[in-house]
Image (cartoon, rainbow over all chains, first blue to last red):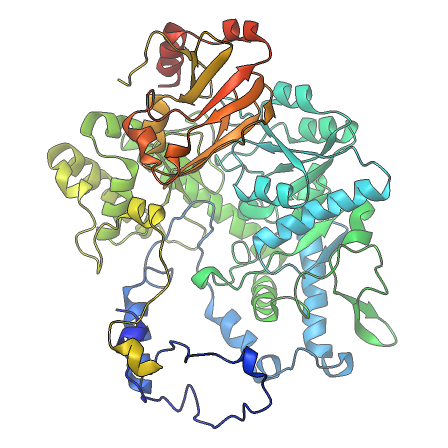
Length: 491
Length: 130
């Protein structure tokens, strides 16, 4: 039930919307609504019940194991939330002057430094408000760099076929043409194919390492050398940074620009599609193009913003004010709680959990996509055999997992492995949770063999059954329309 | 086992090509490809008159699982696009080799046809990938 369906004319919730009489007399007639907006009119109690009920229907990291590959659904420590919610942070006006903002600017400056140090980059901007925006900022800086050198023919961005879909999308938005590079059978980028396509048209390459197939590309130095020698730059998609945090630094691998997903690696909430934070880090030659604002520390005057005047070559502003402050603060607190030693333990336990889970699933007879490779923080199994033998596909298994109390791993991604599940347990799960997941997988496979309809019709225990996602995509209609009669009374 | 008509030619990226015998070809995706993608929900067709080279991405098919580029198997000019797929992308799932065709090309180099796989070669490719 939608909140609008609880609506009755005249119902109010003073806590949410104090009733005031606004003066519209100065608004030009042409700009005024002809009818009232179809907003829900509900009591406070109805609003509370509605959203509490929705929250109870939700699968979340606070309630369930959530091994959604490539998304790093780790636990979000309560300390990060409570400290970022201190009144001095919450009540600060975004336009408050620097002199009144030294505390929060000190936090942001330290966060810039910590991200620099853990990624091995020369400078960091916290401005991008999401991972995809960080990606766009990254490739825009690559473009700005080539353009500033008069190197206008470098218009081709190389993207491995295992990449996240956002990579080619970001490159195209920044005005590049995308060229795909194939992945070899062992999961590494096909280095010969790469050598064949680099040239004076190459602007750069966008890589995730470990890649989306869950393995660390062993040829990264050869890749960096090949692309750099051709005059291109290396972009690091931070999607899988959790696997190498505190162990290997993208800057040391030869990357020129990186974006980090603070909502993955640095444990800020993923809720509801945002808000996120996607800071970018760069090597020295790209520093002038970093998105603004940046926080700089001056020994005499304290912390201050660097803006258009300080950075005339910047690709510009991506958001109003300084980015998603609440998210940046949570990441800052998380990083402070961990310290450098804690960051190493994050990647150690993330990879230990993934390899334990991989070994147990393999022992249980599930087929690994890259059986000869060690997992990074995530790995892929393919249910090709189960689909063929039992007529039960990956989506059926994913839905059945919900019945057993596990959020499904990522399904059908990366695209190059058929019937795949991409599984990322993260470092915050105890061994019992991993064992429980393996037991559920074994049970589901037995069901697929003995009573396949049970799996094909899953989920059975959730508030909604299988949704018709094909029809939803073909006949997309997300606009709520008031029921007959209700519309009239709202006008 | 998916169907692989013997009179067609095939690419490694799972397009089929029908030689119309008049310097033009019709292109679609194979039965195996539509089956792997699942129910299609959207097709983006190439523009008529567009010049394409071998392996250029020139159309897109989207299912609930994924969006996939369709690559031009040959070089030439786009002379036809299957407008009937607009609003009925499921036609590709139902009849991949017939009503589910995607576009037509006027070839700039008909000898390229010889470089494509025949049905036997494509069957072998699927077996290797299997």
